[in-house]
Length: 345
View 1: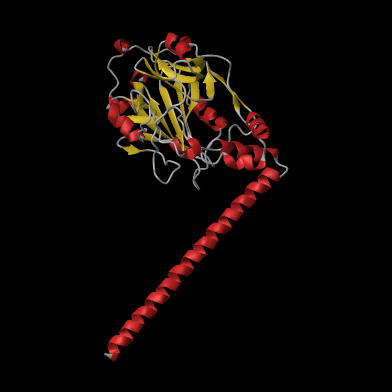
View 2: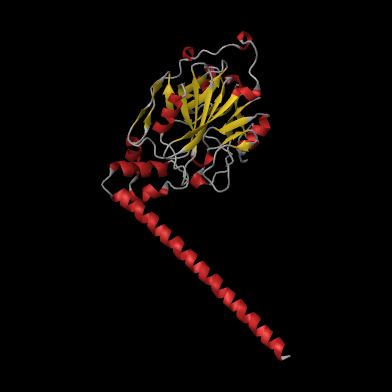
């Protein structure tokens, strides 16, 4: 009997000791998190209140390109000051729209044989001291089209990049246009601006925005226009985002830090018609992200004569060969998105 009492007392003692250990662990974790928050807040304050205009512009534009962290610069600056910082650190697009005569695509009937699906796509690793990424070169532009999560956008949610690829019976894809994403909590169900799929306007017919899409001759069109004008130009598949990077071989002027350092998704086209799909990882220890200048440099290096920035940040995702090729900037993996550029077999 006495042995049972002693055993019970020992069990209670062990439970109390275990509870104290768990409690101490939570206290330590809490203190570490609190310290990190104070450190981050202190660093942000030093940058925003410090003398370096470059550092201030870089941090402000980087945060303003996120969905969930836009409030941080507004804690330190008025709305007018934030707008001024963005203007001083941006990409100023060339005031032109694509001249399709500068892109010459060899007609399929003139080819000795059609490009096989496995030969149509080439994946190239992209890297620098501050970022890592993937460049997908699609030799046949007719295989690139827009996928939408719904034929009529409404209250529904978007789809992940692999779901877009599967839905269309495609073999590859990247995220495309922007979408409503208040505080980073959007479900990818409502695109912003124009969306055209297979020649039909799905959303944003009367919207004036930066349009990025392929026309019926498989040539990439980039520039600011209304949805009605895009239809008149014969765009078969298009989305809205921006800024435009390259038009008719002319690169946009990048001011200051050029939009901050973030994950990026971009599209371009070479003079021979090949489509360039670029994703840059960001917000990670091994890849901070890229500026607009970085992306323009990469696309120019690989021959883009027309190019534009697509939705990036935590939406940046590339899918090919049955798996995600990049490292999305979210612990949950690829996000739900309303539109994607997919590559058909």
